[in-house]
Amino acid sequence: MVVERLAIKHFDAAKSVAEILEMDQQRRGVQKEMDDLKAKCNGLSKDIGALMRQGQVEMAEAQKKEVGSIKERIKSLELEFESLGSEQESLLLTLPNIPCQEVPNGRTSQDNRLVRQHGALRPTDGLVPHWDLASKYGIIDFETGTKVAGAGFPIYKGKGARLQRALLNYFLDYNTTAGYLEVQPPILVNPSSGYGTGQLPDKEGQMYHVGLDDLYLAPTAEVPITNMYRDVLLQEKELPIKLTGYTPCFRREAGSYGKDVRGLNRLHQFDKVEIVQICRPEVSYDVLGEMVAHVEGLLLALGLPYRILALCGGDMSFASALTYDFEVYSPAQDRWLEVSSVSNFETFQANRLKLRYKNAEGTNTLVHTLNGSSLAFPRIVATILENYQNHSGIDMPQVLVPYCGFSYID
Image 1 (cartoon, rainbow, N blue to C red):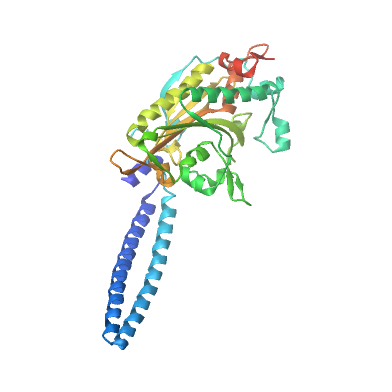
Image 2 (cartoon, rainbow, N blue to C red; image 1 turned 90 degrees about the vertical axis):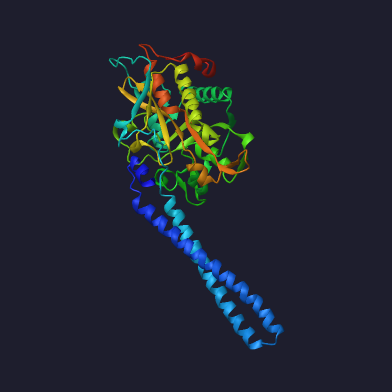
């Protein structure tokens, strides 16, 4: 079952699963031997007292030696048991989450299933790409950012910086109005947090590592926010938990090149507002639908043409059971740019986090975790600039005007 389902993600789990099952059998064998030896040791220890009282000192001393040998063997078995457990856990951490039954078959983004599309696509003729618009109106400085930090670290100036701040405040207000509690999490996380949400070991090469302190720069606010509940036992009345937060996000994006990294298309540092939900398993797919509708409402309010895709197995993340991507149309580039992913992880993260709740029957049960981008700034900025440009400047979406304090860039 596991091997078959993971094949949907084009992950060959046969060898790993066989090794995990073999280690499980070995651990069971070691555990049985330990239990048998402990029982024998307890019996001999009781006999020693009786022998001493009967004056059979020599036999008692012989049994003491045997007890000592048994205890040494038990210590050796305990080390073997721990070692097998560590190896088994390491192998388990390499297995992706099992995709749910609704995940489309496919290997690449070309195989993703279109759920729906909204908004008229602006004709591309005569439109200026966002990087040229940013330079023309002096709102984003790519060259100085490259000098200061390297490619993929732009500097926002004037109305460009104010637009960033406006998006941050608008997105957070939109989320808190919908019942999400705003939190301001750390932007550095420890390895346990990375393992908890599934970025480690899968995305280790894509994360920036602070070696001296063994910390990672957060690739998304999902990581610190969800890890707030690591090793927590919740009460059913506390569910669902709805959280939103902003962090700058850091990703190495190794292997990206060409048009994929032009302008704001793909950055090493970018801003993003995240929504996270923790809920009972039986309602998680209803919650996923609510979160998709929530993100869709943001794009409707911004007046941007978008489409929603159900990701195929080959295009899904390591940790996801089902993901919907939102893409906004970039008319000057004549391409779709991803601006959000909304995912249900089912119990995958909760199992790693040891995050459970006590249900009505008093049983400790794993929760389901979900998250979504709400939204990622750079490509939203890119598509606002391109979709709202005219012959003399750039209009602002009406919902942003109260936040940025201007209605036009010229």
